[in-house]
Amino acid sequence: MSPESLLMWAVPGLLAVVLMVLVVHSAVRGREPEQAGSHEKLTPSLQSLGLNSAAFSNEQAGLNTAPAPVQSSPQGQDDVGYLRHTLSTVFQHLGDQNSHVRAIIETVAEGIIVVNDQGCIDTFNPAAEQLFGYTAQEAYGQPLSRLLPSIITMQQVLNVTRGKQEVAGIHANGCVIAMSVRVSMMQLDARCMYTCLVSDISERKAAAEKLMNAEARYRDLVETAHDLVWSVDTQGRWIYLNKAARDIYGYDPEEMIGCLMSEVQSPKHVAQDAGAFAELLNGKELLHYETVHVDRNGKAHNLSFNAKPYVDADGKVVRSSGTARDITKQKAFELQLAYQAEHDSLTGLFNRRYFQQELERLVARAPSVRLVVASKFNFEVWRRQW
Image 1 (cartoon, helix red, strand yellow):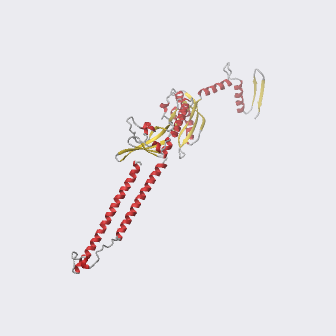
Image 2 (tube, rainbow, N blue to C red):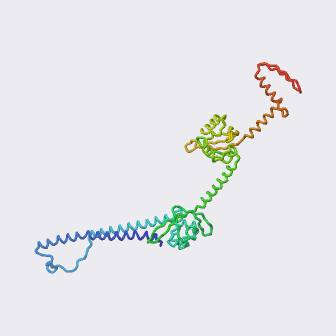
Image 3 (cartoon, one colour):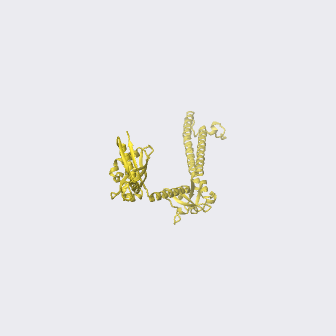
């Protein structure tokens, strides 16, 4: 029997013995006044008859000297019944308590291992059997270091620390399992006993490692992206910028954290950008919003923003995040294409296409006009009446 079981039986048993002694003592003390009162009542009666207790004998009274049968008083029977009922209640409570504690130990989800001061296993509940693959009979008396080697110090002492410890457990088949162990110490009959609460955290560790790997991959993608990845609070202050900020603004991301976005906006686009940010705060997303920001050297950069607001549980916007792409070269290329479409590549003068566009624009503004246009290919006459 384990020390815990001995303790659970010994303490209530001792209490029962003490209670029995007190009840018997109370019963004896309660009967003494009754006997004393009977003797005091009998003595005056004998004296009134001219007899005294010393002179009164069985021969003078002519009574039979045979001893009378002793009968227990009703008070004595009540005391014995009360004592029997009390002891029955105590032992019933003891049995219920023992059954309750054993049911908890056998049905708890965590493994419970009780180890003595020599580091040997004394108690091994069913949950521990499932964790390690050993039965309670196989584990009894075995050193704990066989199951949890890292929890035993170099001095072969159990490592008792506050809180949980994440250690490696050894299964019966030799597999290593990630486990969480909480160790507590107790004193039983001047001996140190240790209770270990053990749980399997291998699935949680695998999920955490998977999440960390996913976060690392996402971080690598964000940090190595050529587009700007950013976040601002509701005041328009940068709270996150990836390394692309260095290519656009000429600042390290750490230098810009906490600064206002308006500090890098082009003066010509301040009002336009303020309206776009107000739409974000109202919960509206921005797609391909084009604006102009300036870097630390004052050079303008055309940027195309995609932004999304994020709200809390109450639906209030708490931050905005998104991406931005530097389209400065794209804008310059578009301007170059537009110039080439309207100018002659050799002379740099406006070409026929531009001339026709301007002519149509002017004709649309004139009330009535007759124009004769000469070209090296043909002559065309337009008459427009309005």
